[in-house]
Amino acid sequence: MAISTSKNLEQANGTLVQRINYKPALALLTSLFFMWGFITCLNDILIPHLKSLFELNYTRIMLIQFTFFGAYAIMSLPAGWVVGKIGYKSGIVLGLVVTGIGALMFYPASVLISYGVFLTGFFILATGITILQVAANPFVAILGAPETASGRLNMTQAFNSLGTTIAPVFGGLLILSNHTVAAEKAATVQIPYIGIALALFVIAMVFAFAKLPNIKAESQEKAAGSAWAYPHLVLGAIAIFLYVGGEVSIGSFLINFFKEPDIAGLVETEGAKYVAMYWGGAMIGRFLGAISLTGIKKQSTRYMLYAATMVFAFFLAWYLTKETTLAALFLVFVVINLAGFFFGKNKPSRTLSIMAGIVVILVTVTVISSGKFAMWPIIAVGLFNSIMFPTIFTLAINGLGKNTSQGSGILCMAIVGGAIVPLLMGVLADHFGIHHSFLITLICYLYILFYGIRGYKHQIQ
Image (cartoon, rainbow, N blue to C red):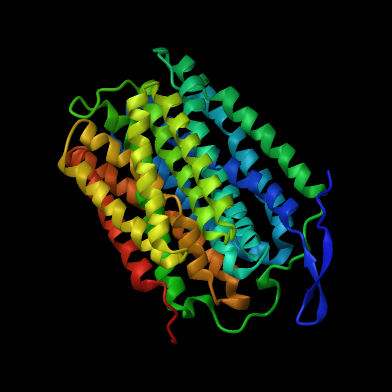
C-alpha cells in the first residue's frame, strides 16, 4: 500500500508556490492514535480483572498503571533521541513492533498466572506506545499550517478516544468473566492480546512500505540551546503530568467506584459500559474540539458537523445505557461542552482554561455527593478532558523550533503522571475510601486551569 502526497500549485503574493496534500498521511497516522487508545484503555478492564485474580488491594493493583506509565518516564527521552536519528516514519514502525511484542507477553503471563510477567508485558507495551507518541504527535503537528496544529491533534486524538470507547465494551465482553478457577480466569486475556499483536504487526508493515511526506525530525539537525530553557514547556510538562494522572486515575477507579453500594452497586460488566461512556465523552469532545479549532470557515458546515456529533453522542449513550432518559442526561453535558468551545472563541489557551474550570466543578460535585449525583459528573469529566492533552501539547511545543523533538520527548516523559497519580490515589482509597480519593484529581485540574490562564505564555529566560 502506498500513501503519497499530491502536489498542487497555487498563487501566493504573485508567485506560484507548491501546496502539499497531507490528508492521506494524516489518515494513516490516525490509525496509530486509535490503536494506542484502545490498548491503553484496556488497562481499565484488566485492573478489576487482575485485582480479583490475584486478590490485590488498591495500592498493589495500581502497580499496573505505575508500570505502564512509568515506561514513559524511563523511555521517552531515549525514544526522542532514537526518533531524531531514524526519523518519524522509522520510529513509528519500531514503536508498532515493540508494542506488538508487549501484547504477546500476555500469553505467557496468563499461562504462568504471574503478576510479575503481566507487569513486564505492560512495560513493553508502554515502551512501544512511548516511541509512537514521540514520533506521531509532532509529525501530526508539522503536517500543515502551525495555526491549525491544535485542531489536527484534536482530530487524531478523537480517533484515539474512539479506541478508548470501544476497548471497555470489547474488554468487558471478552476479558471480564464469572470464572472462579484461576487458570480459566487468567486465560481470558490470551485471544484479545494475540489479536492485538497481529494487528500491530500488520500496521507496522503498512507503514514500512507507505510513502509518507519526507519531513525530517528536528533533532536530526544541531539545535542551539535546550528545550528545558523554555518555561512554558516546563510548565506544560507539569500540566501533562497532572492531566494524564487525573484522567487515568478516574478511568482506573470507575468500575470499582460504581460497585460501591452508595453510588450505583453495579456489577463489573455493567460498570464497564459506563467506563466506555467516560472515554466516549472524550471522543465526542475531541470531535467538537476539532470542529472548533481547525478553522472551518463556512458556518453552515460547522453547525452541521456539530449537529451530527450531538446526534451521535445521544445514540452512543443510549446504546450503552439502553435508557432514553440517561442518554438525554448525557446530551445535556455534551451541550455544556459545546458551549465551552463557543466561549473559548477558537483560542486554545482560553478553551483549555474553560474546560479545566468545568472539570473542577464536576469533580467537586462527585466528592461531596452520592448515588447518581456522584456518578454522572465523574462520567462527564471525559467530555471536558477531551481537548486537554493535544491543546497542552501544542501550546507547550509552540516556538521551540529545532528543539521541538526534544520538547516532544520531555512532554511524553511527563505522561509518567499516569503512573504516579493513580498509585497515590490507590493509597488514599485504601486508607480513606475510594470516594474521597478523587480529591487528588481535583488538585490536578486546578493546576491545568492555571496553565490555561497563565502558564502557557512564552517568557524570556
